Image (tube, rainbow, N blue to C red; front, side, top):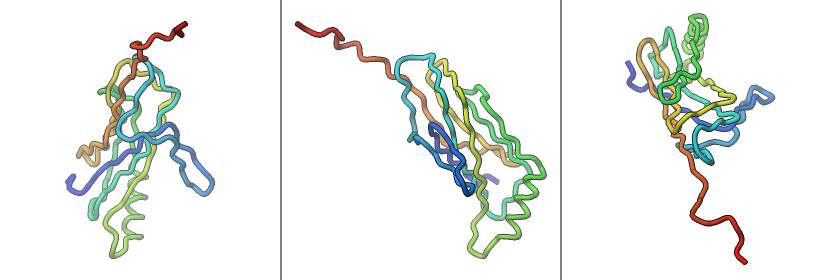
Length: 154
């Protein structure tokens, strides 16, 4: 059943709701985030904007989404049956001949986010029992450079 389903996440410093139901993604990370200094570290805020794609004819009955850092559950999103029914109705009534599926967009905000060690932030969607792993964000530290003395020479 997972054929053609995918989950893509953009990790960023913030997500902001704008006028007209638009979302601004601020400070986007590629595939890693480097924390200055060493662990443990606390990020004031970290966000993830995710897009889950379900190809036609897949119409999910239940979607459960988990955000975790190195296996530690941070947040969970459970799309209720009535939400899935509304999405199913929209998918069926607004389908066009060139439509290839249905996308569901959702976001997570972790504020603050305490990190004990380097690791990976991963978001996983379970669609009717099938696990779809999103891309992860690797988090590492960059200790200060101690090879050069900080004292001026006379």
